[in-house]
Image 1 (spheres, rainbow, N blue to C red):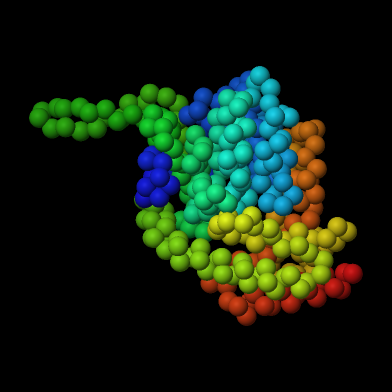
Image 2 (cartoon, rainbow, N blue to C red; image 1 turned 90 degrees about the horizontal axis):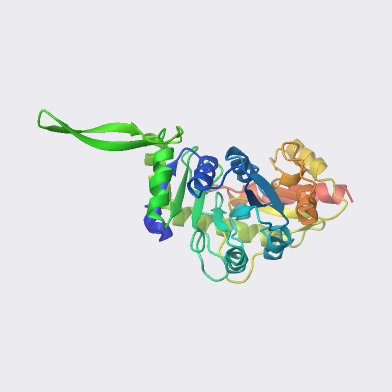
Length: 336
């Protein structure tokens, strides 16, 4: 299903998107001594995957409007060690891949799309995740639009790459046909160091049903997101998310940008006191202690301080949504 729906022809089910990212870099030959350029504003799985293979993550700043990788940052960071670019589609909205891919190809970089949040999305040109990448990785974590509780997948046009990745999900095994006493059977051959990154049968069954329902679930998320945007336009102290004309995000999260000077963590605490669960947007990875990267990413750092994720899920009622908006308006007004 994933191979067909992405139009890429090859897909490998994995235990998580993090596993898929790890396998993508391994299958592309990224390793020790290489640099992997990474969009900074993201959950750290993207940069972790570079460390897993012995590469160095180099963080690139993002656009202040879409929160996605700024293509102009690529040329500033490329060196002779640069091997791959990991592009993240934040909160279910795609980066503008034509510009990103043009820059990456100019420098000979392999492109890995971290589309953990973006299965079913399209950018302003109508491109789907993976169309311009060497590999695209998806998540089926519980917060995603289609979920198996936990799980992931990678997709690619490269049959040989998919074959390597598939072997790596199962301890590096290559099945070998044997015939004994007139009976044929598979005899596993361990041809490379691999991992236990398989998606279980029950998880695969769950996500198959979820993907069948994805158009319905995404349509509802889009309706709820539009409703949030209309209501929040009247609330002082925040900016609703920007969507480029023609883009089709799947709204894994609905994230607003709080005005400068607003205490985001204080807002989260005040909303929780009112019975409304909110969260940060995501992370400025270069600020995390595991990386301690001195390369500045000021836009990402600013978004990290000011982003607030509001409740958004399939099944959220309009009454619940109205309660979220009213509570947020009260909290922001009280803090003025």
